[in-house]
Length: 315
Image 1 (cartoon, rainbow, N blue to C red):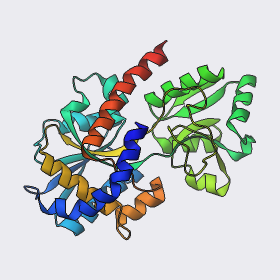
Image 2: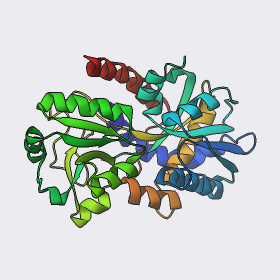
Image 3: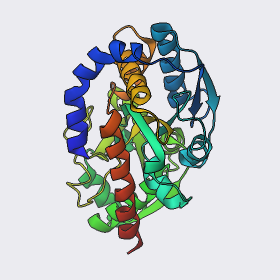
């Protein structure tokens, strides 16, 4: 998965430069319905709507946003699968939707039933505590867990499984608390209802202010904000919480439609001055563009890895 990410980033310059030409070769048959798997007004919803706004300004295409929330994006996935695959209907989910969530839902669909168009941004998923805990490192947290169980906040079943495996690998005592959304984890940690939790970038302001501490990276690579924090692999867990916001369409979308949409989206989110670019830089640490066949390989790999994670967590 890491090699796919690096290859995609290496190709980003070419994708961005080619965006205008590719978009000009294909025109949507009418307004594009943009399904959004996130609650209205949140950061992910704002990102999707700003991308649509920038695309309208850049290409003249018309977008009609529509909220289709619930079940970790699976409500959107099931709703979009039977829509026209001509580029007139797309949706924003996260890669976990077509990975772990799809595997657990066992709804009779796989990533092959969808067209992965492009990612837009990644998560800076960390294991975070408040600074007033006095933990300067992950080792400090583990030492505290040997004295009394720590309340570990997570916002998805996948993260609950990873937290469980982390406790096993570190011989630590965790009481895993699952809540709805990263903001709920942040609020729980700040309020003292949780001792530590997974946060996917929402912690950045608190870390910069010295109020929060990134104790570890939940990614396959170090966190941008705290590069010295250990990764899950360093801590004995052979899984990670790598994830991206992802634009998808129904399966079998023509290549010219997929590539034109991917190129146009990639261009606006990587162009200085575009609203979506500014928002993604501020909230998510910059755009991460993995498009076309690489995006399809990413979600199919995530689906396969989900099976391995479920098996490991059930042992």
